[in-house]
Image (cartoon, rainbow, N blue to C red; front, side, top):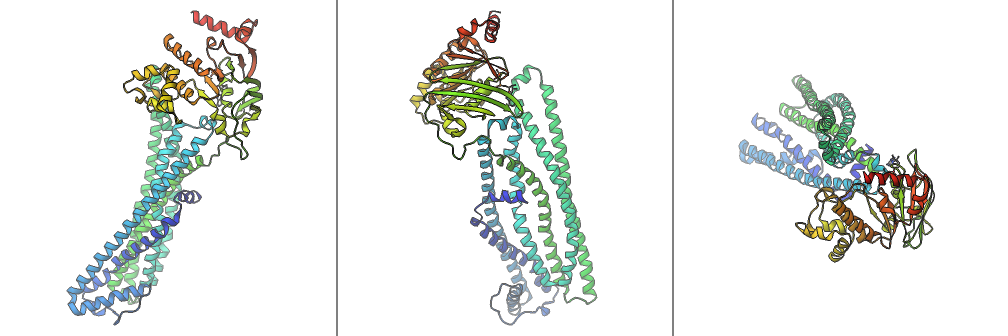
Length: 612
Ligand SMILES: Nc1ncnc2c1ncn2[C@@H]1O[C@H](COP(=O)(O)OP(=O)(O)OP(=O)(O)O)[C@@H](O)[C@H]1O
C-alpha cells in the first residue's frame, strides 16, 4: 500500500486533475446506471403493464436523490404515454437511453483522457528520478549491480508500473465508486435482496486475495530473472568479438537459454495464476446471480415481495452490472501486485542514498595553486583493504607516475583523487583543503581524466570532443589539432559531423584515444589523471598518441598510471605500488640504479619482453 501511494505521489499536484476526474466519473456512473434502470419502463410497455406505472402528477423541485430522478422520468414518461400512446412512450424511453448512453460515454472518454495525462506524468517523473539517482550514485554502487538489471528497471519495471499501477488507478477510484453507487440504487429497489447478495460477495473476495498474494511472490522472481537475462544480453553485445574469437557461442547460448527458459517458466506460472482470476470471478458472479434469481423469484412467487416482475428483472440486470466493476477490481488486484513488485524495484534505487556527496557545509575548492597531498591514506573496498598508509605529494606542474604489478592499487589511488571513492583513512588535500569538505563539482572541475579505455558516446566527433563545454567550433578544432586528431577527422566522410558508432566502434583504437585526449585538452584542467592505455598500438599510431599526451601534460600537474615504463622515464617522480603500499619512489635514473629494486626488476622484464 505504501509503495502504491508513493507511486501515485508522482502524479502530483493532484488538485490539477482529481476533482475533474471525480466529476467525470460520477457523471459516467449516473448515466450508466440510468441506462440499465431504463429497462424497467421499457419492459412495462412491452408486457403491457403501463397502467401500473406510478407517476407523480406534478414535477417536484430538484433534489439529488434517486427518487427525484425516478419521479421526473416517470412524470414525462406518463405525459408522453397519455399524449402519444404506448409506441410514443417506447420511442421516448429509447430516446432517453440513447442520450444517456451518449453522455455516459462522453464522460468516460473525458475521464480516460485525464488519466492518460496522469499516467504519462507519473511515468516521466519516475524515470526522471531514477535516472537522476543513477547519475548521482557513486561508482562503487555500479560494481555491485548488474547492468542488465539496472536496464530492466528503466524499461520493463517502469513499463510494468505503467500498465499495472497507473492503469489500475481507475480500478482504485472508479470501480469502488461505481459499486457503491450501484448498491445504493439496489438497496433503494430492494433491501432483502441486496442484503442477500452482500453475504455472498466476501467469500469470493477472500479467494481472490489469496490469488493476488501468490502473484506477488511469482512476480518478484520473474523480474529478477529478466534482469539477469538482460545482463547476459548486454554482455553478449559488448563482448561479441571475444565470444566469436573464443568460439564461445554455445557457451553463451547456454547461459542465455537457461535464463530465458526460467523467465518463460515464471511468466507462464504468473499468467496461469492471473488467468485463474477471471474465470473464477465469472463463475462466482453467475453463481451469485443464479442464487439471486432463485431467492428473489421465490419471494415474488410467494407474494412476499413488493417487487413486480419488471422491476425484478431490472434489478437482476443492474446487479449483474455490479459484477463488471467488481471483476475489474479483483483482476486489478493481481495486476497491482505485479506492478508493486516492479515499483519497489524502481523505488529501491531511487531510495539509495549516494555515499559520496557534498556535505551540507561543503566549500568550493579554490583554483589549484601549489600541491596535491595524499596523507596517511588507506582505502578498502568493503572489507578488503587495498591501499595502506600512502603518503605522496604532487607539486604543481610536476608529473608523478604510478607503476607496479597488476592489482597493486594504482587505479584505486587514481580514483580517489576525483572522489570516485572517499578514503577509508587519512586524507587527500589540495592546497591544504581536504577534498571531503569540498563540493564534488568543484573538485572534478579542476581535473581531466583520460582513461585506459577511451569512453566515447554514439554521437558526432564534434560533440564527443565538445562534451559538456560551451566551446566554439574553432576551439574544438584547435584541441583536435593539438591531440593529433584533426587530420583523421577531416579525412572522415563527414568531417567533424561524422557519427562514430556505439562507444566509438567505427574508429581505430588510436583514433579513439586521440579523441579522448582532445576532449581533455579542450577542458583545459589544471590537474590531469592519466590511465595509460595498455592496448598496444602500431608504432605510427603510438607516436601520434604519445605526442598528443605530451602536449596534454604540458604545463599541467599529472598523475599517470603507467603500464609501460618507457613512457614515464621523464616523470618527476615514479612511485612503485605493491599490494597497496608504496615500496619505492624516485626518478627513473635513481630507481633503475637501485640494486634488486622492484622498479629495476620490472624495467628489465619489460626490456627483455621488448627484445623478444
Ligand atoms: N570495485 C571493486 N570492488 C572490490 N575490489 C576491487 C574493485 N576494484 C578493484 N578491486 C581490487 O582492488 C585491488 C587493486 O585494484 P586496482 O585496480 O587499483 O589495481 P591496479 O594496480 O590499478 O591494477 P592494474 O594495473 O591491473 O589495472 C585489486 O586486488 C582488485 O581486485
